[in-house]
Length: 359
Ligand SMILES: NC(=O)c1ccc[n+]([C@@H]2O[C@H](COP(=O)([O-])OP(=O)(O)OC[C@H]3O[C@@H](n4cnc5c(N)ncnc54)[C@H](O)[C@@H]3O)[C@@H](O)[C@H]2O)c1
Image (cartoon, rainbow, N blue to C red):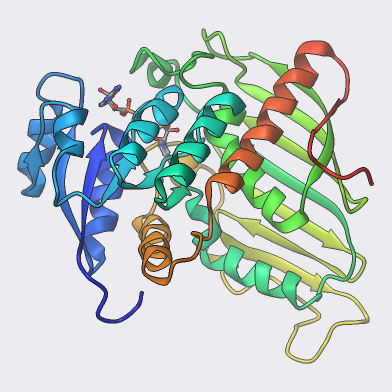
């Protein structure tokens, strides 16, 4: 962050599971302070605030009226992100919106337009872009170390119990949540899009295998990229006991494999350049264990550092007058792929994405 940056006050809307991560991330940032929180559930904001020494406001209007709130973290159910975010933007607050940006493209567009019209910064959480392995992978891609990209795979084989879906009325609903791909898989969908560029077409199958929910708990898709590369997306919450999220990127000159944000394998061919190893297990391979790990099995088991890095980027973007690293359009791009997967599964036909140049 820019040195000497002013302290920014934060408000959190929705004090559930992910709000605790936002509060912890804000607490690690020298120029950020949690000022107030609010929640519609009786007593939830008060309990959250008491544990963190901030104010609890009775409603969104009161939180938005506070002059010491410069940035609002939108941590409500996914289908309410735009509704809350638009109100916060109109109140002149910068926005940290949890993923997905919302569950429909129309809602995403309303939020992006509201932020633009109000002149406030908007970042949509995709914290894994700030994981060490993704930073390194993007550097390698930028250096052309993999050659021309040909193939990519994004895999989220996680496990969620029925009790997880039953823990809140919004979970597992089309209107407020979406299925495994919209909620869990979207993280690596965003990374896939970020590394590989625009998607032109998806062909998908979605099924509900192991839960009593209206949404899919398992989604599979074949993807065509504008570059001519192809790929696959897999997302499930029915894969007991849960496995690391995985991204594999293959180019004409090599392959990099990321698991849970760490490079576990990188192999470069004859054209490997100085400083790039020919083939190794990846600097962080030992850090990724076998079997159920992290968020693969536990929704709350995610690390604070990457959320903190993304929120720090939002503050730096405000200071520097630039767009955040993960802006509203990036959130929309990931959502567009998810929506295309759902549409392809519904119609049993390939779906072309709009706004992408023909390859
Ligand atoms: N980035 C990640 O890794 C990650 C992880 C978990 C959840 N999330 C996202 O965070 C969001 C919330 O998920 P969660 O697991 O924390 O849900 P949750 O159910 O634990 O918490 C949501 C909270 O919002 C409150 N709420 C509902 N409507 C509200 C409103 N209109 N105004 C104020 N408060 C309201 C609820 O009472 C609840 O306390 C979802 O969009 C989810 O996709 C992201």
